Length: 249
Image 1 (cartoon, rainbow, N blue to C red):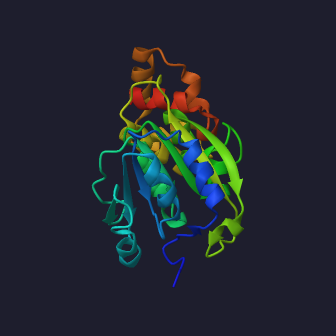
Image 2: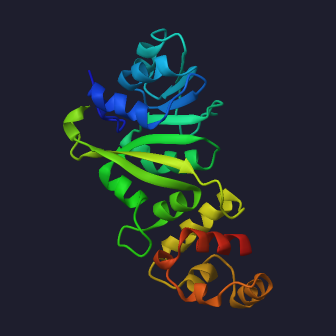
């Protein structure tokens, strides 16, 4: 029996699966990470195109159903949020809705060449929101600093089983080749802290993180940073401005 108790809505439209594979520009040497393969409909499209697919499935019954179906697919019955992930260069997944945020941050903190991911459309819109917009927040800032991101298509809810309440979207992420050299984990923690107080000015958010005015004055003077950054609110900061703050900290 197919259930959505784990936030998984299984893609049943083969044409969508074929387009997802095409967005990933797959070649025979690629090693692909697939999270939440479910019944294997996307796996079936990926496997003939690459050297290896690593499918991470938390549901033991679904994982067992995938074992042995494809000669080049390694099935891991595990939680993708905690398991040690294998050596891959691309990520192609119809992600379980319930872990969208957590798994996205985890995947972004690791190296990859290209990712094609399916999310709820609302999540995809928040991911691609422009600076200063209502939807712009922690997610868009982190993604915008680490990647070039584009929505490839909207997928109707009728392409899934069980049918979800909302439409989905396919998002493609290319890691930025040129960006500030910062510790990604520290950058993510800073952004999270700032957006906890998103209506406060940046200097108030930094103070809440234990960085006082005297220390900020010292840092900004040493690094020749524009003190006007401190007068902005988090949603007014570009990803690169937030990265400059992170490096200063």
